[in-house]
Amino acid sequence: MAKLIKAVIFDQDGLMFDSERLVAEGWAFAGKKFGYDVNEDFLRGVRGRSVAEIKAAFLARFGSDAPFDEMNAEKRRRTYEYVEKFGIPVKKGLKELLFYLKARGIPAAVATSSSREWTLGNLRQTGIEDLFSLCVFGDMVSRGKPAPDIFLLAAQKLGQEPQNCLVLEDSLQGNEAAINGGFVGVMVPDLTPPSEFLRKNLFAVCENLLDVIELFESGKLHN
Image (cartoon, rainbow, N blue to C red; front, side):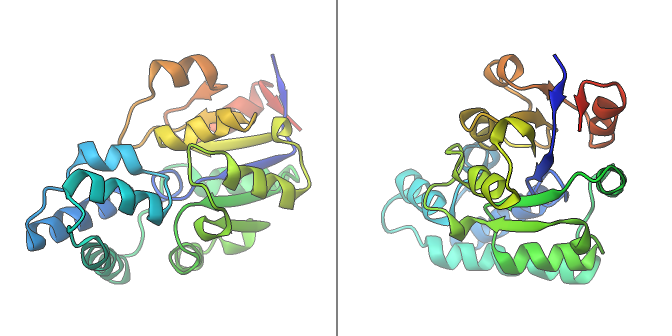
C-alpha cells in the first residue's frame, strides 16, 4: 500500500555519513590505550542511544570503575582528528536524495543522537546544511532510541503526523524507534543487517539512499 509522505527524517551517523566506522575505530583506539576491548558486539547494542545510556551500558559491561568519560573523550578526539584531516565520508545517494526531495517540496530534517557541534560541522563541511529544514539532537530528548522521542520531536517541529513522515535509519535501535513511533520506516543498513523483526515491520529495506528515490518514483511513496 502506497504511503503519503509529507516530510523525511534522516538519522545521521551511518545513514548520511560513513561515520560509524570512524567511531568504531575511535573506540578501538581508546580501548587499546586504556586496556578495554570495546568491540563491535558492544557498539552494535548502543548505536543510536544517548551518551548517558551508552555510559550506563559501558559501566555495566566493563565495571563501575571503567574510565568511560576519559575513553569517550579520547574516541571523540580521534574521530574529530580524522574528519578535520580527511573530511566526513558521504554515503551513496545522500545528495541526490536531498535534491530530489527539495525539488518535490518535501521538507527534510535530521534527528540524531549525536551532538549539535558534530552534526552541524558535518552538514556545513559537506555543503548540505541548507537542504534541511531543522535538526533535532540527542540532548533535546530524555530517552534515546529505541524510544521514538527524537523522531516524535522532529515530526512535531515539522508540523506533521508520524504516519506521514518517512524515517531513514541504519541502526537496529533507530529503526525500532521509527516503528515504536508509528512512522514509515525504511532501513538503509550500514554495519548491521536488519533483524527479522525489522524486516517484518519496516516499510522497506534499501541498499542505499538512491533506492529511496526509487520508492517515490515507483509510487510506493508519494507526496
